[in-house]
Length: 197
Image (cartoon, rainbow, N blue to C red; front, top):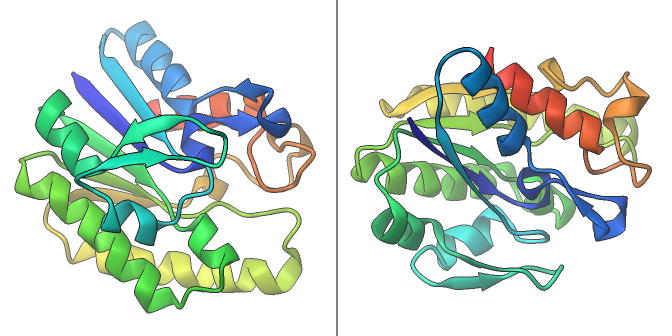
C-alpha cells in the first residue's frame, strides 16, 4: 500500500515554532503496519502555502515559509507515483488570508481531481479548529467543513471527507501546539492513528 499525505504545515507536523516536525503520516504508517497492513507513506507538507498556491504550482517546485523544498502535487504523482491513496489536508492558510469558501473549494477540488485523473483515490481532511481563532472562526470553519463534505461527495474518486476535529478535538489541550494553530506532536500522532482506524 502506497499512501501520499499532502498539504500544509499541519501535514508536515510543524510544531514548537518549527523546531520539531511530527507528520501524522508517520503514525498512520506505524498503526497500519501494527494492524498487519504494511505500507509506504510519503509526506509533503508545505508550511504557509494555501490551496490556491498548491493548485497554481501543482506541476512545479515549492518552497515553504520554513524554507523546506517540495514538489507540486501533479509532479509528485507523475514522478513518484502511483499511489494507492492520497490524503489531502489544506485550506487552513486560505482561511487565514480571508479567501472565500468557494475559492477554497475550487482549489481543493482541483487538487483532488489531479489524483483522480491518475487513478489515485483521495481522502479530504478539512481544516482543523484553531484555538487562536475564537468562536467566529470556528463557526466559519464548520460551515466550510459542511461545504467541503458536499463538494467532495460529488467527486467519485474521493473516499471520504473528514473533519480532523472528530479525531483531534480542540477540547484536548495536549493535542495542540502552544501557538493555537498547529497540532502538537501528540495531536499529529492521534490524527495518524485515528485515520488508520
